[in-house]
Length: 117
Image 1 (cartoon, rainbow, N blue to C red):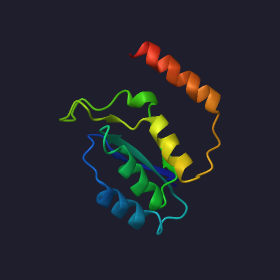
Image 2: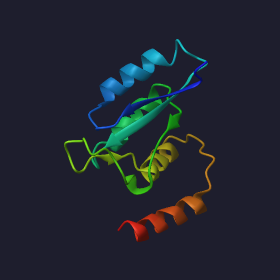
Image 3: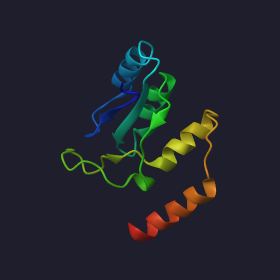
Image 4: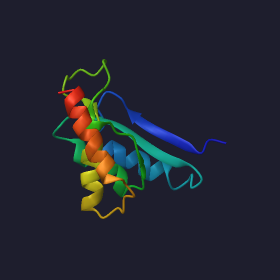
Protein backbone atom coordinates (compact mmCIF):
# COMPACT_ATOMS: atom_id res chain seq x y z
CA UNK A 1 0.00 0.00 0.00
CA UNK A 2 2.99 2.36 -0.06
CA UNK A 3 2.31 5.14 -2.56
CA UNK A 4 5.14 7.60 -1.83
CA UNK A 5 8.76 6.66 -1.14
CA UNK A 6 11.56 9.18 -0.74
CA UNK A 7 15.17 8.17 -1.33
CA UNK A 8 17.41 10.10 1.03
CA UNK A 9 21.07 11.00 1.02
CA UNK A 10 21.26 12.59 4.44
CA UNK A 11 25.04 13.02 4.57
CA UNK A 12 25.61 14.28 1.02
CA UNK A 13 27.67 11.41 -0.41
CA UNK A 14 25.50 10.61 -3.44
CA UNK A 15 26.69 11.41 -6.93
CA UNK A 16 24.95 11.68 -10.31
CA UNK A 17 25.80 8.08 -11.18
CA UNK A 18 24.29 6.58 -8.03
CA UNK A 19 21.24 8.86 -8.24
CA UNK A 20 20.68 7.97 -11.89
CA UNK A 21 21.08 4.26 -11.17
CA UNK A 22 18.58 4.24 -8.32
CA UNK A 23 15.83 6.24 -9.97
CA UNK A 24 16.18 4.60 -13.39
CA UNK A 25 15.93 1.15 -11.79
CA UNK A 26 13.20 1.85 -9.25
CA UNK A 27 10.70 4.08 -11.03
CA UNK A 28 9.86 1.93 -14.10
CA UNK A 29 8.93 -1.30 -12.26
CA UNK A 30 6.76 0.56 -9.72
CA UNK A 31 4.53 2.94 -11.70
CA UNK A 32 2.05 3.26 -8.81
CA UNK A 33 4.71 4.56 -6.41
CA UNK A 34 5.71 8.22 -6.39
CA UNK A 35 9.46 8.29 -5.76
CA UNK A 36 11.01 11.39 -4.27
CA UNK A 37 14.49 12.71 -3.58
CA UNK A 38 15.78 14.10 -0.30
CA UNK A 39 19.29 15.18 -1.22
CA UNK A 40 21.94 16.92 0.80
CA UNK A 41 24.53 18.83 -1.15
CA UNK A 42 27.43 21.19 -1.08
CA UNK A 43 27.25 24.56 -2.85
CA UNK A 44 29.17 23.27 -5.88
CA UNK A 45 27.32 20.00 -6.60
CA UNK A 46 23.61 20.60 -6.08
CA UNK A 47 22.68 20.97 -9.76
CA UNK A 48 24.22 17.70 -10.96
CA UNK A 49 22.26 15.82 -8.30
CA UNK A 50 18.89 17.38 -9.15
CA UNK A 51 19.57 16.89 -12.84
CA UNK A 52 20.38 13.20 -12.39
CA UNK A 53 17.19 12.58 -10.42
CA UNK A 54 14.98 14.58 -12.80
CA UNK A 55 16.39 13.04 -15.96
CA UNK A 56 15.65 9.61 -14.51
CA UNK A 57 12.01 10.25 -13.74
CA UNK A 58 11.95 11.78 -10.25
CA UNK A 59 9.24 14.42 -9.91
CA UNK A 60 9.08 14.86 -6.11
CA UNK A 61 11.77 16.72 -4.15
CA UNK A 62 12.43 17.91 -0.62
CA UNK A 63 14.19 21.20 -0.13
CA UNK A 64 14.84 23.91 2.42
CA UNK A 65 14.93 27.66 1.90
CA UNK A 66 18.56 28.72 1.56
CA UNK A 67 19.53 25.09 2.22
CA UNK A 68 19.32 25.59 5.97
CA UNK A 69 19.56 22.55 8.14
CA UNK A 70 21.32 19.36 7.37
CA UNK A 71 22.70 16.35 9.10
CA UNK A 72 25.04 16.64 12.08
CA UNK A 73 26.72 13.38 10.99
CA UNK A 74 27.89 14.84 7.67
CA UNK A 75 31.67 15.11 7.67
CA UNK A 76 31.70 18.43 5.82
CA UNK A 77 30.26 21.61 7.34
CA UNK A 78 29.26 22.80 3.86
CA UNK A 79 26.92 19.83 3.37
CA UNK A 80 23.31 20.84 3.91
CA UNK A 81 19.78 20.48 2.68
CA UNK A 82 19.03 21.03 -0.98
CA UNK A 83 18.21 24.74 -1.41
CA UNK A 84 14.65 25.15 -2.66
CA UNK A 85 15.56 28.21 -4.68
CA UNK A 86 18.27 26.25 -6.55
CA UNK A 87 15.79 23.56 -7.50
CA UNK A 88 13.33 26.19 -8.73
CA UNK A 89 16.12 27.67 -10.87
CA UNK A 90 16.91 24.27 -12.40
CA UNK A 91 13.27 23.40 -13.05
CA UNK A 92 12.78 26.78 -14.72
CA UNK A 93 15.81 26.10 -16.94
CA UNK A 94 14.31 22.80 -18.13
CA UNK A 95 10.78 24.25 -18.43
CA UNK A 96 9.37 21.79 -15.92
CA UNK A 97 6.20 23.87 -15.56
CA UNK A 98 6.22 24.55 -11.85
CA UNK A 99 2.94 25.64 -10.33
CA UNK A 100 4.45 27.89 -7.73
CA UNK A 101 3.49 31.07 -5.94
CA UNK A 102 6.73 32.92 -6.65
CA UNK A 103 5.76 35.97 -4.63
CA UNK A 104 5.36 33.80 -1.53
CA UNK A 105 8.62 31.98 -2.28
CA UNK A 106 10.49 35.28 -2.53
CA UNK A 107 8.88 36.50 0.70
CA UNK A 108 9.95 33.27 2.42
CA UNK A 109 13.51 33.67 1.13
CA UNK A 110 13.64 37.23 2.48
CA UNK A 111 12.32 36.10 5.85
CA UNK A 112 14.86 33.24 5.98
CA UNK A 113 17.68 35.69 5.28
CA UNK A 114 16.53 37.88 8.17
CA UNK A 115 16.11 35.04 10.65
CA UNK A 116 19.17 33.00 9.63
CA UNK A 117 21.74 35.44 8.23
